[in-house]
Length: 389
Image 1 (cartoon, rainbow, N blue to C red):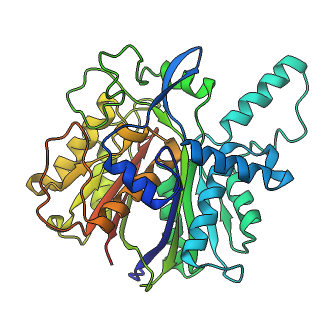
Image 2 (image 1 turned 90 degrees about the vertical axis):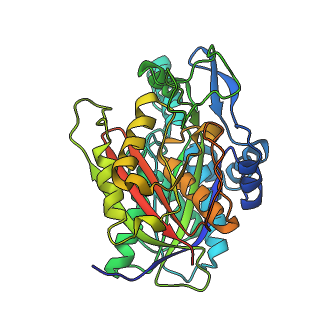
Image 3 (image 1 turned 180 degrees about the horizontal axis):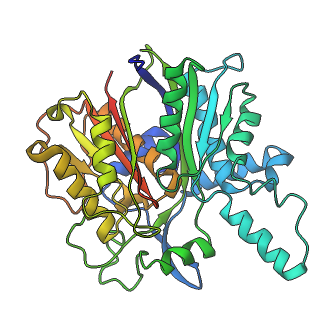
């Protein structure tokens, strides 16, 4: 196995937290959630939408090129984040880099609109197919950045973005590429997507006792499911070897799937997470892991099974635990990379960002190593270990 370090040389995101690093960090420190109510799936619904400034940025990108007028938000979100990340990494048009940006649901909004029109008129729009294929996120980013390297798209439910990172690491370690842009994008705030989550009985209800925390991700005493959907995209630039401009190193990757009992099942102690964490931590002293950013979607079973898996793997050496879904909701395919953003920011500022539901924790050592978890329907888990340079 190639043991060469992988550097993260840039990161960029657009989410309910904002679209620049300082704004995102300020939001993480304010202790408030980003949820608003919108009428979706025929009723008032909690969601986490992009900030007003971020929405304006997306409008500007859409209007900047006639070809972008017909693209789904999931593509434009990823495009906004990718432009900034590549600029921050100092990559130019001369650099050959790969692109792997995935999405769980893809062009949901466009697909629903095109299908509705087809049902009503019996005719499909000319651009219906090319603008709703799953591969069109990476393709359009390659077009926008005028890049020459390989471009890959995939959907592996909620662990999509961290699978992109896995792929990037694999390409770099194979020597087939020395730079890769990886991430995930999701624009799931549509009637049908919300309707599907409600059908699974996992969505947060407006009539819950307290609106103060609509998503109780990380509250292990909750008696009902409280998942809420959010939108956004995030990407990072990966490069082979130790780079002077590295903001972190990827020092461990792990992945696993588990045998399914049904379409969305996960075992009582999340076997897939136990395996993925152990793989990512292979030669790591457990005491040296400072924080775990959990997947913790805000469902009773999802939160608890991951906690059990962490207890199994770490025993008495449990690091500090946190999640961001109580604040920005679940962004499906982009969620893992937005969790990575939280990890990078905590490392940079050496401040632990807990949840409103956890006991006040005093950090007793610097944050140098963080483990990030993601899992999706189908029991496919990914764990990424990052380290401060």
